[in-house]
Length: 349
Image (cartoon, rainbow, N blue to C red; front, top):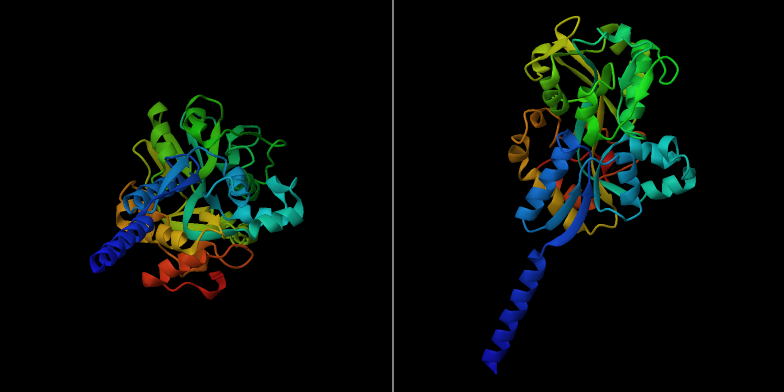
């Protein structure tokens, strides 16, 4: 009898251990696989699987406007998002106007953040064969400015308006295609220039330069330091990038131009979000999988060390707090604090 009880106890312990390590199946959405959010979500999937946390099925090339709504509606478990989208959703504004403010606010209240990063800084670029030779040449031109309905499109239009005063559809023609068609659109002659969120070096430009030499321009200093740009950079989902020109590295064949020794651009900040109802242990383990593997993740591309992944204390870098309505998931807070980070009180649930 004693042996039987011991065997039963051991069997029960084994079953509990198996249940604790059993991988669940999750879904995730992200933008183009070569960009910042694509790499971070795919890395999350890789390390979550290796740690026995979850098998994450990742759909790349998505318009994140739709992805955020999918997570809120429970159709997807995880998505990357620029933080302008939860802000617009909370007000039923922009691409979420059809939902309305009441439904939008309800949807946002279902969401929480695991970790943050900078998606990119908006730059103007063009092939050297183009008639566009800088910000002053955009009037009457065709500009590829992001995916349909995406936050990148909203920001790109805003950046051009600040830099030039020009309006999409009135002063120039905007071209919108999904991220998985971005490089094709850049190389097939569909546009005279590109105003897109870029990294240093940038994956899209690294591929597109195979079709010819290119130039990328910094935002002019006087405009960057002006009231309109400063106000825009303090808005939800936006930030500033001001780095030495020597750090604004791009692929061979891409010339980066600034009027002085600094490269300036309005940045987009965001991160990975889930539903608040995700159980705390899962959110904790997902966040921990990223924090435990930061060096390995950053080694995957030349630009990932430069996107503020693994930073949390400076809200001007992360985009948390202020008018941005999302907070960290309680499980994520536990993972960050366990790893020795200080989570700002304003970002805690």
